[in-house]
Amino acid sequence: RATALGLTQTHFVTPSGLHDDDHYSTACDMAVLAASALQNENFREICAQSSAQVCFGNPPYQRWLKNSNKLLTMDESVIGVKTGFTDEAGRCLVSAAERNGVTLICVTLADPNDWQDHLSLYDWGFSQVTPAEVSLPEDWRMPVAGGTAQEVALQSEEKLTVGTADGSMPQLEYQLETAPFLYAPVSAGQSAGTWRAMLNGREVAHGKLCAAETVAYRQPVEKRTAHRAFPARIWKRIQSFFQK
Image 1 (spheres, rainbow, N blue to C red):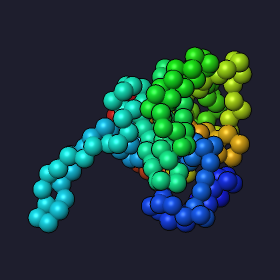
Image 2: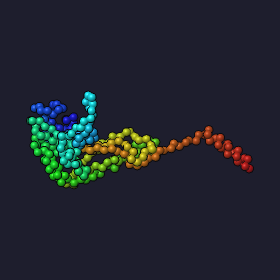
Image 3: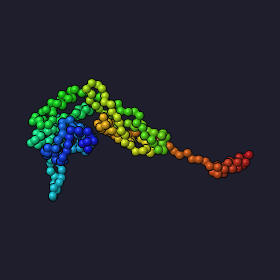
Image 4: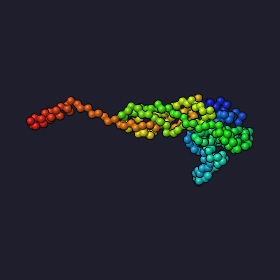
C-alpha cells in the first residue's frame, strides 16, 4: 500500500510504530498518507473526535477514551489526525484542518513545541490560499433502461473546493463508479454512484453521484394484430347495416 501511494521514503516494519532501525518515513510521506486516510469516511470521523465512549471488557462496561491530539480542542477547524512519540523520534504530529472548504495537512517530526507550531503554520498556510470551487464536468451521463430517454445526466451531490495560491486550478482527472444502467423511472436527485478526482494518479477527493434530471417510464405500445382487428371491422359493418 505504501508503494501504491508513492511513499518512496517510507519503510514499515511493524504496525505499532515502535522504534526499529528499518522502520522510517518522512514528513512529506506522512502528509500523503494522511491525505489518503482522510478519504475514508470512518477514519475521518474517528480521528476528529476528542473523546469517545466505548463499551468493552470482561464483563463489558462503558468507559471514556480521550484523544491525545490536543489540537482538536485548541482549534475548531482541526479534524485530526495522529500523535506519535518514541524516545528516538521525539514528538511527532500529523494534523489536518479545514477552513472554508479547504483542507490543509501539517506534519512535524521531533518537535517539542508541536501544538503551537501547527496552529501557527495553519494560520500562515490558510492565509496563502484562496478557496475556489472546481467546475465539475457537465458531460457525465449513464444509460437508462425502459425510459423516455436513453440516457440521464449525472451531477455531484457535493461541491468540490480547492485552495489556490496563484488562481490556477489543478488539472484533475475523474473516475466514475456506477451500475451499467438505471431502470426508469428515474427521479432527479436519485443516487447513481460515486466519483473520484485524481491528481497525478492519486485520489485527492471523492463524492456521490445523483441524477440531474427526471426520466419517465416509457409505456409499451400495444400492437394490434390482424386477428384482433378483424372482429372489430365486422362489428362496425353490422352496426352500419342496422343504422340504414
